Length: 153
Image 1 (tube, rainbow, N blue to C red):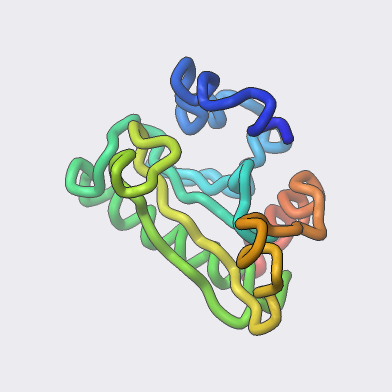
Image 2 (image 1 turned 135 degrees about the horizontal axis):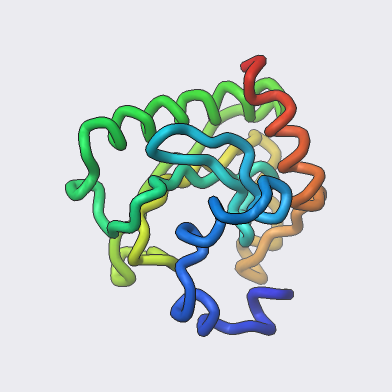
């Protein structure tokens, strides 16, 4: 509801992926911080546990990343998958980067990798009929669970 009420303007005014690292982990929904990139929950998730891996540096496309950023984005993506598998027992993942508004990026100015956990039973009539999903967990609870399990996975 916060997304619907605010509309797209807040995303145009301030880059949420540049702002998040300056917040506490809880307020920024951050589950892990690396040297060149960090991991946070998607504020508007497709499924519970939907993670984003973002470089700290603001750039829009993957070909602008340094070799160090590419390596850490990959390592954090792997760690995110292991962590989500351990805490949510998901059956698979969708991974991806939408680069540019025309390609579906909601925040097209700041590169980010999606990690969407999937379960064999996660499809229901909501995505088909209403083009929306019901999420059974609060973001704060999911962030705490994933952050607490991060080092063990």
